[in-house]
Image (cartoon, rainbow, N blue to C red):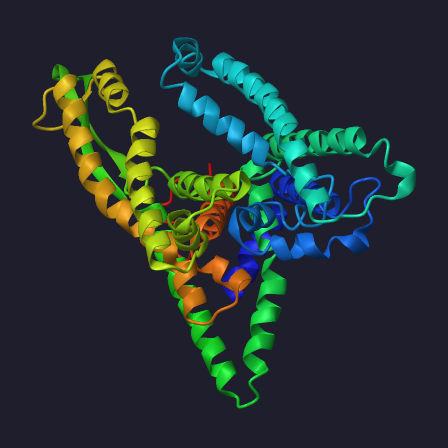
Length: 449
């Protein structure tokens, strides 16, 4: 405890770091306040059905990411998700569109161009999502005040799109002038905002038994949650180090010679991060949603909808896990360009001991990546279905979401990234790091997206 207090004091002594943290907290507070501002014209008392609907399924996931703004019919109801969708689209287009590939290699100028394209695409996606959200809102019998009936749809759409643009601006400002990745922090704060309510509901459900056994079960749940967090951190941080050597010329008393600098390439066991779970969840909900709205009937259709609407069911989770494994390989192939890595090594005079530079090096790295991705994808799939297991064991739905899946990985990734930046400030000012050893071993910057 003494070490923790000293670390907080050291953080407060660094003026720049203190200002960045306060700036970040201030903008996060603005975002949370905006999440509770109801759309103009909506009667807040009529939103009970929407709150019930937002407890499960894809809508429950969206509501968790927006910190309850979705169920509150807030001006921030779409949250930062259109921006996330736009970023994913740009990443996928980078595989097939030469102009985007060129911008990705242009350094800072290319990054600015891609950011501008992502912003414009965010507005387009928000324009497409806003009518769907309003249609769902009206389908839940949300009441509009009579004075706003004529103007409700145009005003509400304008507010939703403006809320998304404002959330995007907040995230970029946090990244530029605050601490941590702003977009990821906004998502994490939205998820954590549901934690107090979920915790209180779980405690109430366990205490309501009256025999005292519920408290013991709750303590076991907390211990299990701690172990799951440790598992998620280990999966996020695990790397396979590929040794690399760099030959460089040096001048000394004996004349010119060569020195060998030793380093390594850290290949992450889970290079895809949380994206495979997001892809799999989105695709899992598409067929059920289409069948429900198409009005298709029949025993086979009913069986299919039953199996894939039950997130605690065996077939749902088996299909979910298989899709996560497949998407992990797919997204890792997008994220890690082994040919580019081998080319950069060759250009900088680096080589993997015992492996020829160039194509042979790319094949060697790709082979290692394929081997470590399999256990990484399986562990990621296990982590993704843990909430369903928790619900099967009797935990509340909101509380079980923190036992794995997208929510847990985002929280872990964002916290590790933010702590890494804080530790860099401390070490650069000759203070101890966040750990007693002075450095968080094996830590690399990780973001949710």
